[in-house]
Length: 405
Image (cartoon, rainbow, N blue to C red; front, side):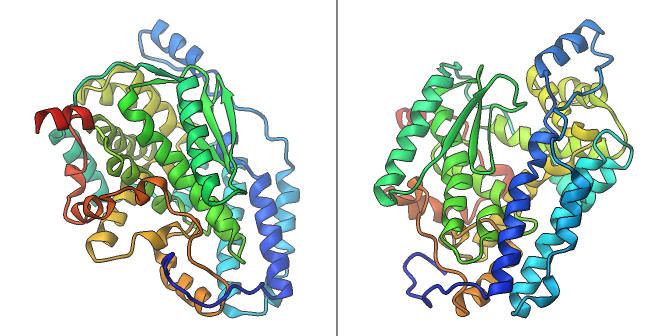
């Protein structure tokens, strides 16, 4: 299913399926679990950690959920899944219902001993092969050319607005809300179609476009394409969509010219940190491992450690490297790239998407990322089909590589 395909014309979902689909999308929009698990006051956390001789971190604080989780769970349980007209649609919608039930449980268990188990149930743990790859990257991937962090949040906002304007030339209804916040626990992230930027964000100019393409060219574009699908779950995300989304986002950084070795090392560090969190180790222990054993700067080591211990041990960060591995396997096996932008889903859903398309309930992506429309893109993509994960990085930004050629 690619943008060039004619395919079957889209048709609306049957009435009960449409009702369940809309209800699931509404509950997903209300349940902003990522914000609920984002620690508050991370700058103060570092100050207290440093003052303790890097031995202790105060308990993580979070915004209190404004939702009644019991009421959300009841609404989920009462959805008429048994009356959905199509077995195909029933399977897809029931899978999402189960995922949302697990997300509610994750938020409920925030800060308790049961949180890690709930996280593994939702996002998976750290399999032995993934941990070996992460350790290989940490031991073998060197640093890239050091660059000055010369772009602030205003430059990022301007770049994002330029990106949105480009997409609006293709699709006038394309839009994106931007929120600049001093306390989001991440430099930038997309949640429920909104882009959040850290007010103190600073990054090298060479990393500006790669990160914009990760957030906008992947997360925002796939959400937009999903809104054009009869099945609304393709906008909010079918069950277990995170690994493919993050794999596409990281690959976008490489395809747009600059995925430095440090970035790949951070993804590997997140896997190691998730494994340590599963084994009950705390923020100071994770920090010491990354900073002292693997040479990470203090800010990077602390950021990864805090992310890994969110809620009591959030294993979601392992999906970045896992998703990248799975995506490269897909491409190296001859898999289509463009079809992956039809919405938010897992690689395992590709067969389901073909069945939905045959039934008229899925259509090709309306938009492709801006970088995928650039001259020479196919050549760069083909090169990726032969690259091992541990080699998927660039030691120098594009301008420096051209000067060296």
